[in-house]
Image 1 (spheres, helix red, strand yellow):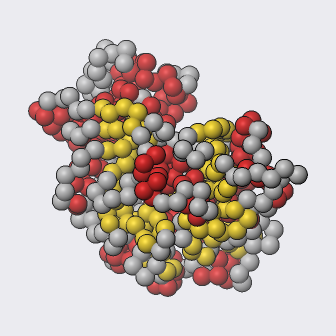
Image 2 (tube, rainbow, N blue to C red):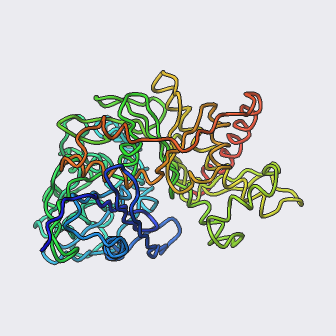
Image 3 (tube, rainbow, N blue to C red):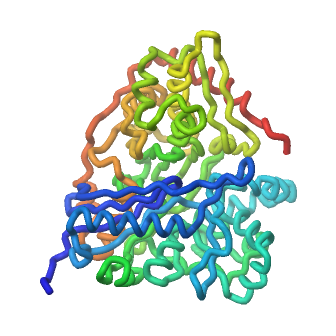
Length: 499
């Protein structure tokens, strides 16, 4: 059998609507990529579910395909890294590995009422103090609470230690190498983890009724967890990097210094600012979250979350049918000079930061008899930028320092219309890197660092390269006018569903 020197790192990028696997070389360049969509389930209004086995099977199929297509063997791979959709909540049988119910997705709003009751009981401040998070149905704690209460026998089984809880990273790690783990960044998104003590919080476990026996071991983001079972890829490979998708993207964008900002334009939009090495405190309803733990040091972030980013374009495709492929939206939107006064607030699953309104719903205002599908498409693209502009404004207030640029990534970052409008609204340059697959790249870097495939963050920073820089060109008066109009439109969307 030939002896190979590992030349690649395999990243598993498990997203909300699809699973992907990407193979990277030592220069951080994409060698091969495979992607597979999997079903979304919407059993009731506001509910979003995945079959955890669909997540696993699609992810495994992508990884095998990328190896087959590239002709790379498992022996040539130095490490595997995981980047995952965060907060999505999975419970499975520890012995059989079978899920006890569908996964409850981060977008799911079924526990908004439970959050209201906790807020009314005065728990929001204590939760924020321990976790850095807003009390919201977005996070895992109330989803797990719901599963324990609504799946027959689940609570008793959990208390006996028969069940495992995990976010998607935990689920994949369990299937890949049999370890029940999560990294510090994913743990910090559950609303059960104390970002100051770096432990599962006993008071929060008691509040949400979560047995500690079902929780994963919390590990650093870069470090060998175990070896992937030989049956999956033909040889054991170290599983050495784990990060939530947004933390991974921030790492992949080489945002290693305080004040650096990246925005990922995926299913949602997630803006993260490096906040240093102690937990930050937001006074503008942003989240304090753990970015990663590498070489014994924990990096913290300020984060703003937009629930509907690229998913808004998918709604144009699947809901309205005005485009056949998501890639067609830019051409349709640029076929008109502007949105014709139309504002689309895509609060289909409520509003994230800085509003945190679980009862907001999607709204279109400003339509006339002359409004066309092109105007609605343009308004949909612009809505992504408006929501992100709100996040940066809040971040700048919290950080009290000017932002010099925003590094953009994710699928929608390839839309030039969106990137230019984003720069115009922000009033700062938006920079698109040469490699826009920064979520997967960050997972690869974290895994590769653990195996000395890359030796330092400085080496990784030197690999980062800009593909295009979008400079703001809109007059300040026009920017203020448009953002004021957006604020009015958002008010129409708020509180639409009765509590």
